[in-house]
Structures are given as structure tokens and as C-alpha cells.
Length: 132
Image (cartoon, rainbow, N blue to C red; front, side):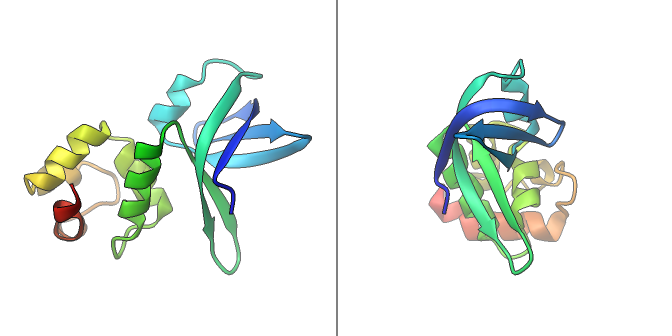
């Protein structure tokens, strides 16, 4: 598994970047918040990564710090939350704000995320509240 990557951004889109390192370009899915931190092409970056493997696909998800990565990994372990959903959750607020919403059982806050309904928000709270 790829745990981190350091290299140069050679392509930036609204959903992912491609980071080149030692002649290989890696497509890395990142949150809109993380994407906004990168201002220019050819910028040198370091990202912590989560490698998501399914039978038909291998995806990389990138994060600026370990706390974001660990929170993402907690989210994808919740039944019904996949990597894209977890990335959407991370895109709505800071980790501290999200932890507070989960700790206080604020389902209304979590349902602001596109694709997260009341039942899924409740699942997130039930499964993660004690880990906050």
C-alpha cells in the first residue's frame, strides 16, 4: 500500500491532482479544502495517502496531515460510507467541527453533506461518538 507521496503536481482538477514522483504520475483524490491549498502547477507536495482497493479499481486519497487521514479511515469504516462520501464529509468543515457534531449527536449538521441522509448521519454518530 502507498502510505504517503511526495512529488510535483503536474495536473490539478476540481476533484483530484496528479502528483509525479520518479517519473510516475499518481492520481490522488482530495477534498475541495485540500485542493484549495495548492495554488500552482509544479508545486512540490507531500500527502499522507489511503489506498482503496476493490476488485476492479485502485484509488488513492490524499491528506495534508495524519489527523485528516485517520478521520477519513474512521468514516469509511462506518457501514454505508464509502471513500467518496467520507471525502465529502471532510469537505464541509474542519475536523474539530465534525468531531463536535458527532460528539453532540448533531445529525442536522451532518446531513448538510451531499449524499448523507438522516439515517446515515445517525450511523456515523452511533459508530464514532465514543471515538471522539
